[in-house]
Amino acid sequence: MKPGYEAVIGLEVHVQLRTRSKLFCACRNAYGAAPNTHTCPVCLGLPGALPVLNGEAVRLALTLGLAVEARIQPQSAFYRKQYFYPDLPKGYQITQGPVALVEDGHLDIPGDARVRGTDAPVRIRLERAHLEEDAGKSHHDLDGMASHVDLNRAGVPLLEIVGAPDLRSPQEASDCLKSLHRLVVALGICDGNMEAGSFRCDANVSLRRTGDPAFGTRVEVKNLNSFRFVRQALEHEMDRQAALLEGGEPVRMETRGWDASAGETRSQRTKEAAMDYRYFPEPDLPPLRVDPAEIEAARAALPELPDQQIRRWREAHGLGMDEAQALAQSPAFAAYFEALARACGSGRGAAAWMLGEVSRTLNERGISIEAFPLAPEALGELVRLVEARTLALGTARDQVFPALLAGEGSARTIVAQKGLAQVSDRGAIEALVAQVLAANPGPVAQIRDGKEGLKGFLVGQILKAGQGRLDARLVNEMLAEALAKP
Ligand code: ADP
Ligand code: ZN
Ligand code: MG
Image 1 (cartoon, rainbow, N blue to C red):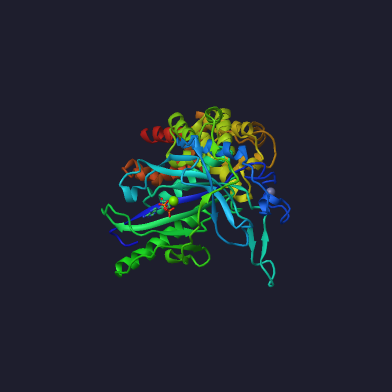
Image 2: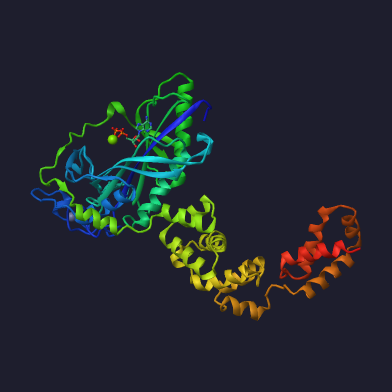
């Protein structure tokens, strides 16, 4: 983007709540069932059917509200938002009105140093989170003849979370979305499956001249179903708006869709074509009142939050922010890391293995940590051998870890059977050092003349002579001793 402009971004996220049944009826809330098998008169919008609010959905919404330190409104109401679309059988969506169940929360995310000059945490306000029902799903590509509608999703509970325009770069937008995603998954209120549409994001973005206190005209970008798309779409949209402003043209207030294959946003509807939804209070539902006891029960049931976990790990193990965030990527990954750290006695060692070999294996096999074949205790034994300098890191990574994965026995057994233990025997190392020095009189003379840089070459030769199993620290130490002798 052209220098001299600043981006202002606000996110709107739709989180599908993991309830057993839908928001206003007893139909199952289940993804992937045969089309139109989870429907009833209420979610089909048949005349005379009456909605009944699902208490479980309220509890999950409260959980999110408490986790983001929001205010829980003791009373809020449902409204009808009218519009016509084939996947909306009632002709209106039930959503919340001017007062939302959850208001004024916040998330703390690392600031983008490129735009703020520091990566100190910034507080992103969450204006509100309200309950509403999802629509059904239209399929336009099942055959060449007609569009089809699947109403299994109609009436599935959504929590719409509206973020304040506090973000200043695509990086911050993506970090904020990741933080929210980690949180809803850790709280168990959403399965977090972005491809299946359980966690959907729209992003609003405007530009202003750097230093200008007023906001510019915003554009809403829809259909951002991956963190990468959020960044790409915002970057593209910022470039598009900057080009307009540079050319002296106004930015139009509109909704645009992200076309991932074309790598650009396309206009969907303009402000002039904006619909009047004719909101009015839903006459078939009483006001939503929350009992303070219910709030306290939800508060007592809160697990340790990802941000708290990240802080605790950073303090206890001296981990970097990026490392700690990566470890908190999912509750199962975090739990595995904690078990591994306990088993091997080293947080740093466990973190390095989780983000190194374990992640590489998961990526290669296309599996998640739940399907990782090794128990934390089994891997912990290997990490412990490395930490105790019984096993060289390279040997552990290249030989013992694959054998462990292949089910060849415990780390200790594999090391013993294959004779892979790290050599820390001074006598053995001394002999190899002498052997390499004798074989390289030229480099040795040059080092003694002050060419210190050649030492690395000798270390390499010695390690090679020891088949990669020598304790590298001892090798360096003993080489220095040998060279110091006349
Ligand atoms: P509406 O009244 O149309 O719902 P809101 O003011 O509630 O609009 O904002 C909707 C979303 O747009 C929020 O996520 C908010 O953060 C974001 N937003 C509002 N104004 C701007 C702006 N000037 N630039 C970028 N995002 C904005
Ligand atoms: Zn139903
Ligand atoms: Mg709004």
